[in-house]
Every structure is written in structure tokens, then in C-alpha cells.
Length: 115
Image (cartoon, rainbow, N blue to C red; front, side, top):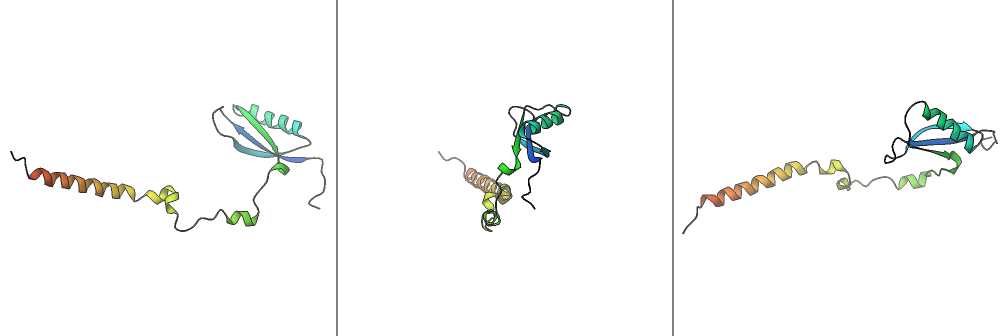
């Protein structure tokens, strides 16, 4: 029943606001063919916001990951350095390092210059 043929196909619509911006998924729509999907997407966007480009993709042409492939996305517990939160301690560590250098410089300056 899921493979039943219908007149309409599902399309995904992507757009970008400026030529330099990235594409973003906007919505899905039903249309009988690619040309009609493009016209519907244009009509929807022309009324709302400025758009630099629109992409229409038939949903059947999009490949998604299966359950086995999704398992490869899980992170290992010892890889905090790969995320920005893993570097949160560096500000404190850098402050301690700078303080240690200042203390050494200060201590060395106490000796004065001998001629």
C-alpha cells in the first residue's frame, strides 16, 4: 500500500536569501511534476521574502541514513577536545600561566642590575 502510485509527488524546497548565503530547507510540497513544483515554490517565495535561488528536490531522490549508518555518528566519550565545550578550561589555565610568568619576571627584577 505504501508503494501505491499517486498523481502527486513529494518535493523538498530549499532556498537562499543572498547569493553568498547557504541553502536552507523551507518546506515540502506536493506537485504532479518538477516544473509545477518549481512554479508553486516560486509563487510561495515571491510573495514573502527576497530569494536569490531556489532548489526543488524530489523526495525519492534524497538518500537517508539507515539505522546501522546512524550508529557511526555516535561520539566516543574521550573526544571532548573535538567540541568547543571541551576548551572551556583554557581561559583559567591561560590566566594561571600568565600569572606564573609575571611572578617570575617580578622575582627576577628584584635582583636588580649589577655592574
